[in-house]
Image (cartoon, rainbow, N blue to C red):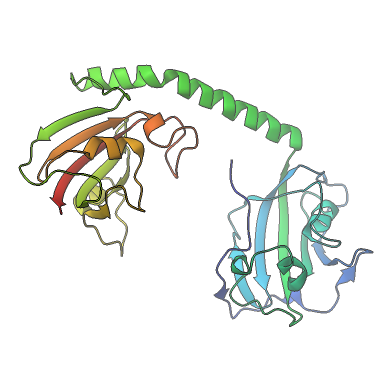
Length: 304
């Protein structure tokens, strides 16, 4: 499920003033919410508590644009059961109809009362009478019941992935003629080249080149520029170099990686096949789905 917007978005200065957000011509609800409708579809469907709004949003703090998905409608807000305060954005969401375009003006200090200081945009100044402006075009509504069904379907899919994982790993081993036996934890360690240097151990500083893939071959991360380019995952500006860290230190690696490199001498080239319980498990990570076994091709460059 997608995460919804938070105020931890870094502000970027925008010189364009939206005429729709002129400080005049706003109406006020009994709870103090300032609003203005540019387009109204009176007979359009309205959201209820628990529904999810799909549409376009421009969020500003005064004249600074914090977020915009104009031209790319997406899921933007879920209507909360309990508003944070009288006249917050939740009241505005319930006023809208499918097809409406509206602007809601909310005191920044009211929102700041419910946020940590580091969650507010850089341009926010307490006590200065600033306002957040939400310019919303409501394209569609995903109902509470539809969301519940989505969640049920997702949980069913994840349970199926969990049940299928052992067979998925065995098929990968067979397809790639891998005969290595798993460790007690279920990790597969394939030594492609045995190094002769110092061995990886707790407290040692290591440098390791790596390429991580899903079992279908999809690359999700690498320290090797050539691998990134070959997979069309090259990131301009990223420095591709071996990962350096202290074994057992503050920078913890996934369990399968930690187990797989332990005791391996510098200069070794190894492949790890890691079941999900030794990787990202039921939560997944970024483009890694829950219950995804992984492979890592590692080169232990140095051990100090």
